[in-house]
Amino acid sequence: MSAALKAPPTPDDPPPLWANIIAAIPPTLRQMMLDQIVALSREAAAAHVEVERLREPSRAEWVRQRDDAIREALASCFPGETPSGAAKALAAELRKYAAGGWTRERDLETMPNGSSDLRLQMHRIMQLSDGKVLAWRRLLQIAA
Image (spheres, rainbow, N blue to C red):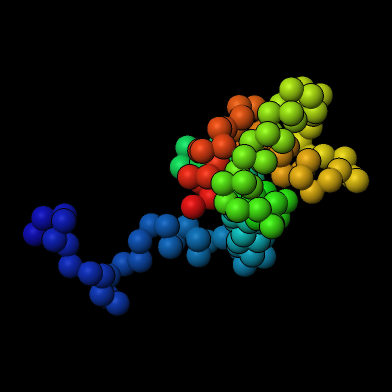
C-alpha cells in the first residue's frame, strides 16, 4: 500500500512518536506549555490585526473612501443645492482650501477641535486625493 493510500490508524496501532513525547511531559509542564501556546496565538492574532490596520489600502478601497468622502461632503455641506450647484460649490471651496489651508494642514492626521464640518470634509477629501482638486464635473459624476 502506498503512503498516500495508508489506512487510518486503529486502536491496536502503536501511538505516534509525538504522542509518546507529549505523554512523557509532566502534567504541570504540559499545562504551562499549553498556556504559552495560547498566549502566543493571541499575540499573533493581535499582530495580524495591527498589520491589517497599517497596510496600505488597495486602489479600489482608496477610490471608494475618496468617493464616499465626496458624497458625504456634498450632502452635509450643501444640502439645499442642486447636484451640479453643490459640485460647483465644493470644487470652488476645494480650490480655495488647496491654495491656502491645505498647504499648512497637509501633514495633520486629524484636524484641530473647532474646525468646521466643511473644513474637516475638505481635509479628508484632499488627503484621499493626494492633494489634487477634482473638477466639478468629476465631483458631480461621483455624486450620481
